[in-house]
Amino acid sequence: MNDFLKSDCSNCFGLCCVALPYAKSADFPINKDSGEPCRNLCLDNRCNIHDQLREKGFRGCVSYECYGAGQHVSRKIYNGHDWRKSPERAKEMFKVFPLIQQLHEMLWYLDQALSLKETQSFHSCLRNMYNETIKLTEKDPEEIIKLDIATHRRKVNALLLKTSDIYRKDFIKKHKKRLDYVGANLKGADLQGVSFRGTLMIAANLSHADLRKTDFIGADLRDADLSDANLTSAIFLTQSQINSAKGNIHTKIPIYLKRPDHWIK
Ligand code: SF4
Image 1: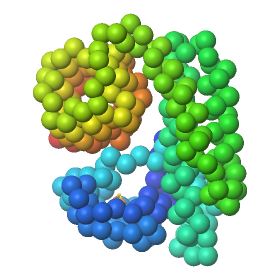
Image 2 (image 1 turned 60 degrees about the vertical axis):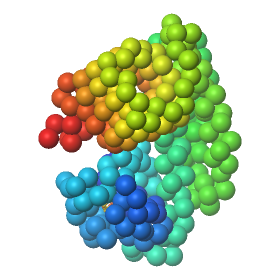
Image 3 (image 1 turned 90 degrees about the vertical axis):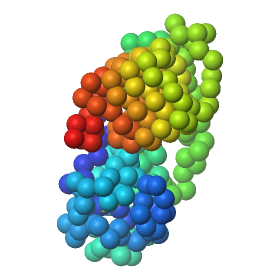
Image 4 (image 1 turned 135 degrees about the vertical axis):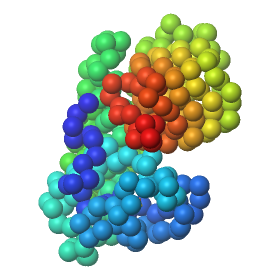
């Protein structure tokens, strides 16, 4: 995985903690508008409660991932000019950040598709789309704000669907598509090769399940139990998804992810 697609908070102006709104819910204890700095954001852009986010009710922060958009916007697009010192550009910066986050997320998926041997036959298409997406992130802020991100996402999505179908081809007929797994008891189930694309899996019991060669793109795994599950060859599974789930030291995760701290405590 390319390093520039990993968040580097030390090179970001705390953009996710300012630019994004949040609402009182199971994920946040209070409301906050876009452009309003979170009450826990320190002047050095660090989070005052970084080690206690879940305990203090900020679970939404644990499951957020910027895919390196924060440092790209802070250091490359705005050349290190902090929103605090450039109030005239702050509003624009807060609009640009979530758009770059979406583009970086697409790059993260495309990067993974390119790393699979199963996609060799259309590597050039994936590479072209990757390069096209990179070019969008290099535009000026005024141009980024006018981008048609939805149309670009549809083009990327077509390639990611093709990737998933080829990667899971030995299992496609075996499993029927299901959209809702909320609270489902799938303990110990053989779910190899299933596409969980866009499915709701909130609080599902997936402990001891065989989840190899699955596709998790866009699945909502909040509070899903992945204890002792095998996810080693799952694709399009993000750090933010597993951060929002439960698991333990026996959960087998793909090498491109880090075991969440709360799975070890
Ligand atoms: S709680 Fe911490 S990580 Fe979450 S938005 Fe506030 S400062 Fe950022």
